[in-house]
Every structure is written in structure tokens, then in C-alpha cells.
Length: 196
Ligand code: HEC
Image (cartoon, rainbow, N blue to C red):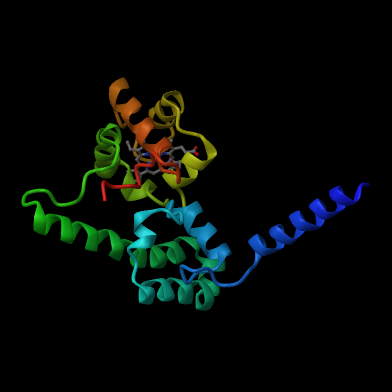
């Protein structure tokens, strides 16, 4: 192995070590905690929800991770409800501010208006069970990450054996839902990014 290659490998290992660092991140949460939030609630580092939390709210999230470990092992759903309660304060605050400046409009619209139709259907017919999931229903964030969002998959799932069956949706509605659910990841076009 050439010296140059050896130096490159040592350098790469050093950078990897720095990135892996298990310490508390600038957001007041550890890398592990951030990746859990991303997996369950789609709140990546860029997401407004996380950025709008006050330092105290982020500390509260960190405390739930540290002190509610028993809950997370025995009752993952209740653990998620506790985390979501804190995350949602940022969303509620954002809507409050928006509605003060825009009478008649409760929350800021999504950055990509193409996702709005699907979000409306999901909010009224699916999200009570599927936003971040229940003990039985998988969360839409998980489906998005797994890539299970095709129109065929959605229509098959709703057709039979589904807890809420029969839910009848048109192909257009299924397609809107499919686009919306697929966007629940941390990408630039994510439906998680409102206009501001
Ligand atoms: C009352 C709760 C509830 C509502 C409302 C609901 N679901 Fe479900 N869904 C479930 C449960 C529970 C399951 C797991 C399978 C089962 O027991 O039916 C499920 C399963 C699914 C699956 C299959 C997931 C997988 O990985 O196999 C999809 C897709 C799905 N639902 C989509 C939807 C869509 C789209 C809507 C709205 C139009 C919706 N659901 C509304 C409870 C619900």
C-alpha cells in the first residue's frame, strides 16, 4: 500500500469517527435520538418542526428518551405519543402564528401544493391511525421510508382485511394519497416542509 493511500485511509477513519460521535448534537439531542425521531415522525434536521422547538422543548424530548426507557421497551406506542406531544407544540405554534396573519387559514400551506390534496384525505381518513402508527397500524413515515406507497399497494390494503374496510377511494384520490405518503421523508420536496 502506498503512503498516500495509507494517509487517505487514516483520514477517512478519523472523519468517520468524528461523524459517529455519540455526544449530544447541536439540536440538544443525540444522533440516536435524532434518527429515532426521523424514523418515527419524519423530523429530520432540516424539518421545520425540529427547528421551531425551543431549547427547553428539545431538552424535554431528550429527557423522555433518557428517563422513559422502560416505556419505550414495554409500550413503544405510548412512548411515541409522549414524544409526539412535544413535537406537535412546534406545529401548533406555527399554525397559531400563521392564522394571526392570515385570517380564515388555520395553518401554512405545504411548500409543494401538489401534496395538499393527498394530505387532506390522509388527515380526514387515515392519519388518526397512520400518522405515526398505532400498536396495529404501521405509520405512514415508515411506509414512506420502506417505499411502500404505490397506488396498487394502497388500494389492495384498503380493499380487504383492513381494519377500516371498506374505504372506497377513487384512483385519483389514491394517487394523491400515494404522492403525499411518498413525500413523508426528509427530501427537499417533502410534504413536511410548509412554505415557511
Ligand atoms: C381506525 C384505524 C385506521 C384507519 C382510519 C385507517 N387504517 Fe390503514 N390500517 C389500520 C390497521 C390496524 C392496519 C393493519 C392491518 C389491519 O389490521 O387492518 C392498517 C393497514 C394499512 C395498510 C397496510 C400496511 C402494511 O404495511 O401492510 C395500508 C397501506 C393502510 N392501512 C392504508 C390506509 C389508508 C390509505 C387509510 C385512509 C384512507 C387508512 N389506512 C385508514 C388502521 C387504520
